Image 1 (cartoon, helix red, strand yellow):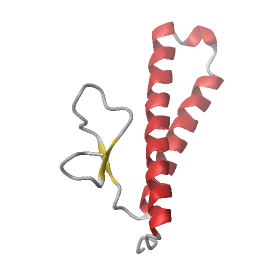
Image 2 (cartoon, rainbow, N blue to C red):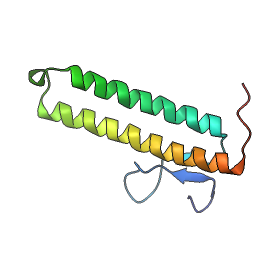
Image 3 (cartoon, rainbow, N blue to C red):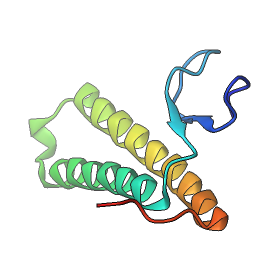
Image 4 (cartoon, rainbow, N blue to C red):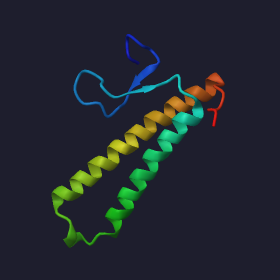
Length: 97
């Protein structure tokens, strides 16, 4: 957790010593779950597109970039799901629609 604001949780994908990407652990379960869902679907579609490519269509660097992007999205989703579990344990009420 961020030392000045304990409800702000650094994302795993932060590079360097200072966490610049933070998620708000005070958000509702629904909001955290929705955000994780968006990232999971983006990673799924990215990897689906990759699986449908012919190996001759993409260079090695292209494959590395796609894999890196998918890994970042999945790391974010895992962080968000962990925060959503914490919100559920707090009994946080669902987000208002």
